Amino acid sequence: MRLLIVLVSFITFIQVQSQSFTSGLMPDITLSYKTSEDYKIIHRVESRFPSYNTDAESFKVMFERFDFQNFVERKIGLFSKVSLGYQFRINNAEANEHRFIQQFVWTDNFANYRIGHRFRTDQTYGKSNAPEFRFRYRAKIQLPLQGQNLDDREFYLSFSDEVVSAVQSSEWDLENRVVAKLGFYINDKNKLESGLDWRIDGFLLNGIENQVWFAFSWFKAL
Amino acid sequence: MNRFIFLFMLSVCVSNAQIKNEFERKIGKEEIPESTRFKLENGFTENVKIKWFYQEDGDKKVYEAKFKYNANVYSVEFDLNGKISNVEILTSKNNIPSDVFNVIDNEIHKEFSEYRILKIQKEFIGASEDLFDVIHSSTFSSNLAIDYEIEVNVKQNKRRHLYELIFDEKGNLTSKRKINLKSTDILDY
Image 1 (cartoon, rainbow over the protein chains, first blue to last red):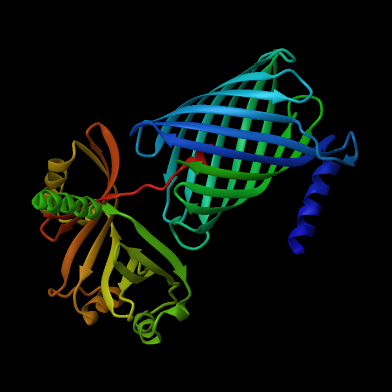
Image 2 (image 1 turned 180 degrees about the vertical axis):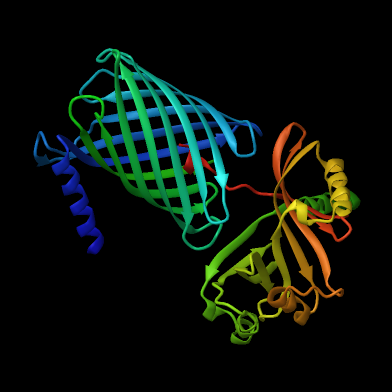
């Protein structure tokens, strides 16, 4: 009950502060498999179902978009990898989009937690909008809840912050994404996560836009 | 044919033995025998916060107490009956005698082309009283056996791996196990 009150207060606060507010559901599934000792293929499907926004001022679950992502990942160190990816986005209201993604990740391991760092650049092309180029950095901390190391059948908390800098038609914008999730590490091949994904953009443009997504994730490895 | 099957089974057993797959779970102090907790806590001269864990490593099942005391970081292992079995103290390369470290360095280079040390623990094995003396009064009986447990990031056949290597007091390699890395897809995507 207390958690619900905090959640409602938090969303109300964001809604009052921002000029535009959207909330909804954001499920995703990530499937990965090794093709060799160093290479891995990753497929990811993510979708968004906005259910409330300040313009419509009504609750209605709608389909907004589907993202199909495919990555080729190469291990370059014990805790570091590079990936090249392509995303096809099916939009409900606009033309479909193509996105090319490049990323470099590494993990810092500490006695009680891990931090994953991710540098990502992407380029998006579609008929409805001018090409968009983004530069992103995300730090994600993972805290096991039942011991020092993350083991099978163990719950964990994860918090991440990502700064996204974007340029489109010579206009720059800045976005920040804060994600808090509760995860369950079933085993190395199955993990579940659920939590809140809070995004603020429009820092450098006219009007701050807030989005809060209830996210559900399943990570499956073959 | 039987000889072939025997050799195959042996090779499977050996390769399994070389992988470190540890499992640990935080537990409450009430799960530890009271007499064990008393022996450990009674010797401290200050308040020490102890974290207790249940740990499985292959067939080995133990309780482990982790704490900081007198500027040292300790991991103390007890069997499931509460009897102390070893004491590990986090240390660094500089605290290993240079002649011993030279032997260790040679031993690692025999196995791997490159290596980087991530963690070193000095392990004491011996009688209960001697082990408690190590913790409570930093007294090291000559009867104690000493090991160095070293976690290394190594290069082997152009690839990076994580290994746990154990060396005896003179620096001779006594155990080599590859550590299974936890999946990072949840941190990467």
